[in-house]
Length: 205
Image (cartoon, rainbow, N blue to C red; front, side):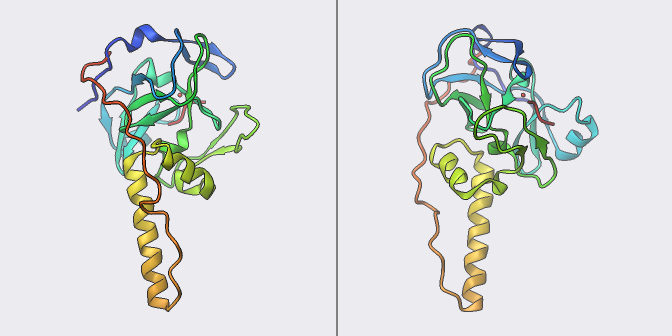
């Protein structure tokens, strides 16, 4: 099984050298919310990703044991702690800020990570650089909430977060503690534009 491409994406982006080495760059301006490309490639499991090794695995996690083994050009999308793009509906990369022609396109890898396995040293160079790229649930709570409000977190990660909060509530009830206020349902998630079928990464394993 593999994902399908978004038509014309290859004409709108280019893979070339940048401040972090090879990266994905815009060939034209993109407006916030505008689709850039779709990550395409075979769907693989966690064990298959491990077997690839760090030098060959350029994947985007889309489920607890499901990854897209990304193909060019999406495979060359780098990370940033102050991203100008984000992933929606599992595999579509959209602009979250105005992106100028020639600008490198980067997203926050942590919004697609929940495996309790990988960590990466971050060298994005942003003023708010976290230093280490790690799972979404390890991000500061305010940053998690910002990404969830923006609709930029993989659906399976949002479900996992809600399940953790439910378990915490149940534990507090069992212990007789007052229930803490929760964020479930507090953040209306934006409705991203529907993608037409057939519309023509610092990278992480």
